[in-house]
Amino acid sequence: ASASLCGTWDIISNENFEGYMIALGISPCVQKVAAKLKLKKVIEQQNDQFIVKTLSFFRNYIISFRVDHEFEEFTQGLDNRHVKSLVSWQGNKLVCEQRGEKKNRGWSHWIEDDKLHLELYCEGELCKQVFKKNGNQ
Ligand code: ECB
Figure (cartoon, rainbow, N blue to C red):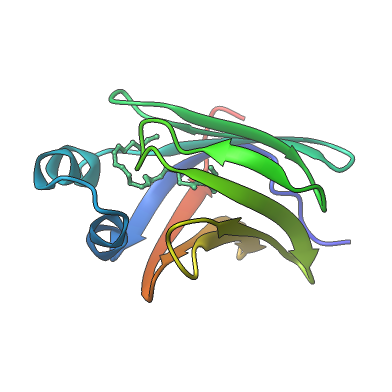
């Protein structure tokens, strides 16, 4: 079994977030605010059911899903698009495919060196975020 994604995580690096936001068509004004956010990720899991919360003082974004069960995702407060999302395990990686208007869109989470890694991708842009476990746990 691979290490659990569960817990509260604080962002420590954010590579090419700008490119990802541009690919999603986020306005320059919102990009500027978003780029400064200290994102927090809270992940809860019960068997094949997940809740993933992305938290910041500006906006929160929360999804819940079952692994291998497609669901309708509305990226409210992000790029406000409707996508069909499917999350599955690919080895030790929890991988989400987000089918919709934007091509090659999705994300992937895994644990490496006690850190939570996240790749967010859209139309050839790849954003790489790394989170460390929050000290209060
Ligand atoms: C929710 C906090 C970020 C709010 C930023 C506001 C505006 C920028 C709009 C779009 C930028 C795209 C994404 C923001 C970065 C992170 C939000 C969640 C990304 C995501 O899909 O996370 C997955 C995997 O952890 C779970 O939803």
